[in-house]
Image 1: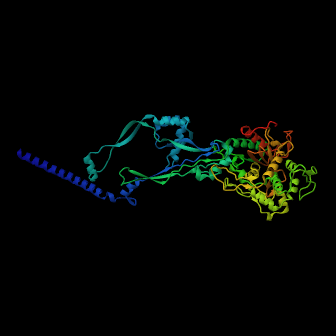
Image 2 (image 1 turned 60 degrees about the horizontal axis):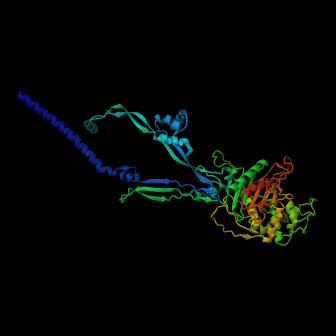
Image 3 (image 1 turned 90 degrees about the vertical axis):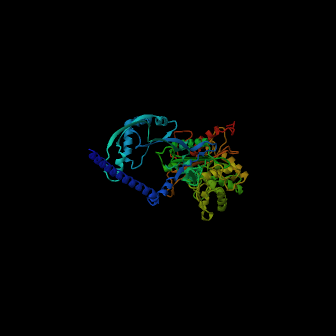
Length: 625
């Protein structure tokens, strides 16, 4: 018995020693393995760089900050273009929990089936992109915004089932690591439930360029594209000023710093866009736009344009119609953003006759008195007598817009005198308002003129063409005693152009008084009369050039250039209508007649200026009218 017991103890001791040796061996292998990894880990590569370098790079971040686009304001600080602060809802279709979908549909004010279909479609077509803008351009007051804010605070019980690997004893782990045993894991299903908030729903800030005056200023202000970059008008011309500069900051780990883990470095400093203040008056612009729109539609014209100036050359209104609403991104017709006032060069017609008379009066070729008679019984060039008038005063020539009488006066002037004066008035020179779209017009040098060119120049044809703003600028001489100042569209900018004294004060006052008779019951501008105010101006009608020739079938442009009051004018307005087709007589409003400046463009002046004057208390009404 004792012998058997001794043998059993020996056998037990022997097997214990063997197991102990196996465990020691495994332990030694593990220690060696970990030691090797510790020694070599800093030499491991992550691509072409070490893990240490890779770690440093992962602490290096770039942050982009978007600059705010500047506003466009009128002379009184009224907003003409601004950034509307909006919200958009961005969904990550891979994160939204199914339990929240009914709640999300309610918050978005959508049918649940519609939302599920949209999410499923996006999930199939996402191609690696998770962002799904399901709502955008939401105003802060929109109920959907408040609904989403409430939804993001809501908690629901979310349960998940997942396969969990069963626990392996540490000895088995060691054997598997030493490859002394195969790894045959077993799994069990585990259900976990937690109170969670919705995931994958982001309520993000958004901006949209907004134009409070809609189509009223479309051709002047222009618009921005889908990237928020100005592409026309003031938006395009002053893009660098309005857009500012986006900021770029680098954040990186600074081992030497004792105070901060990250040390920000500005690569590009954030600069918000600057505001631009125009000389435009929003109310004046509205009245001018309304009058032009009404006239284009009433007279079935192709288009209409107008510009209103203050005596110092500031642009108070600049109108073009037809025009699109820049807030409506679904409609874009490039022609409806064309600025005809600055971009088109045209023959101004009879609106140039007052300057012919001014030049002749300054050169002492006429006296412009009531006893001075101009013979209109003889043909000059292609102009024949009308046998209606035989001798006309300068006042009558302007009042009736008589071409033969004007040419008779022009015969007393030289080509060089015409050219020098027209050049001083600014014809053929850029105004510098929106240089990228302006036409400088045409003023040929006198050495290229024929005799017919000089004659036709006196009544707005021939070797010169102008844009509407240049024509309006020339009429500023009547508000500045013969001086023509430079035009100005943007406040707080300086013009280096000198003010030119083109005509004498005496001559300018005299012709201005004569133009008063044009806007009278006996003058061609009789439809520009405004009760209670003295109006001066000049009508104009010019044949349109089609296919390189002046059209003889009725395609005309009609003009009216006027100012009010006659003495010390406060408003100078020039109107142009392209091819008006339906014009009517004054005494029989339903009776059609041929279209001219008197029965189309002059009516725009009255409609617009009557409203402008009624809201301007600085100009006294005349008791006699």
